[in-house]
Image (cartoon, rainbow, N blue to C red; front, side, top):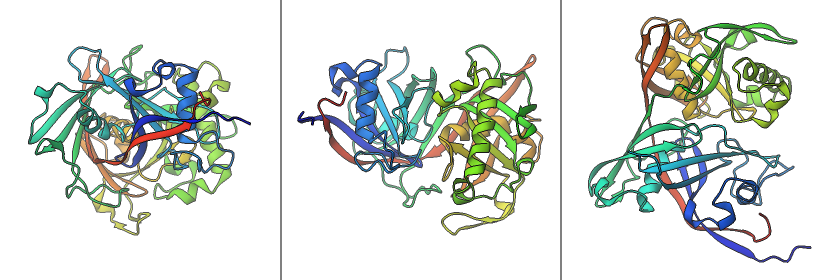
Length: 393
């Protein structure tokens, strides 16, 4: 039996958007965890409480959902014209696996506040009152995010009247701008070169799909083509093992078609990306909180899966993908929203609605997006130290 005493690691537990995660300052980590590798992964797994065959993460900080099994490591930026480097780890619940392949758009809303509170910005860049503009380098995907963080009397202002569906209480609004969100590592925002593809999925057939790398690699499907209305809530999907197996099959074949993996077997090791989402024209429905959403309140319906489960609201990075795809005439997202030129859409998700905008233009034969924007909120839930056994990493 291990008798190693517990160690203390400085950490902050934060909500960002509709997610929660444990935030670390890189310099506060144990030396072996300050570099990428097994020591860092094992430390984070133990902090979050994974792998847990019970699926509860009772012996850790995780909340047993993809939205609450997350970690963030921040440090002063080594990239010119940026304030902070932001590294995100999506922690599997029942497996010993931390996925570093993508970003978390929701937790991006908390990065600026943590950076300011932990003196990661030059003092001259932080006003006593007004808006602090935090230039974030998203290290997982090598992209820039601009966070507009409200300040009051020299401190981050977390309280306010901004309401975000999927979050119970109002808070201060944090605007996020995702600059040039499309994947530019290898060229096209659309890795197949098409706005809509026929995605062959064994046992299913050919499905119409828009596969896009913007915000996060995402596969968009038509809800009706896979037997859904677009008004589904979590239990409609997550209590159906057959449905979850279908979506994972689609995700794996989409990942292969997008060039994210070279063999289907690699999909299990890349759970965070790509995402799978399905869209439908606007319809009236009742959200998970009991709010009635009228068809006239939204431009389209979107439901998205994260880490193998239907998300309770919408991942921030998937919202970027939604806004980007909506702005490009001819994608499934754009068509579900009515088609034509759209610079912003308001979509329905299981918890309510969200508005996201994007600026797209056709340059030669390629679509480009200079910026996608949305508003979230964030606040500190707890700060101090997390404790883990000293021999766990």
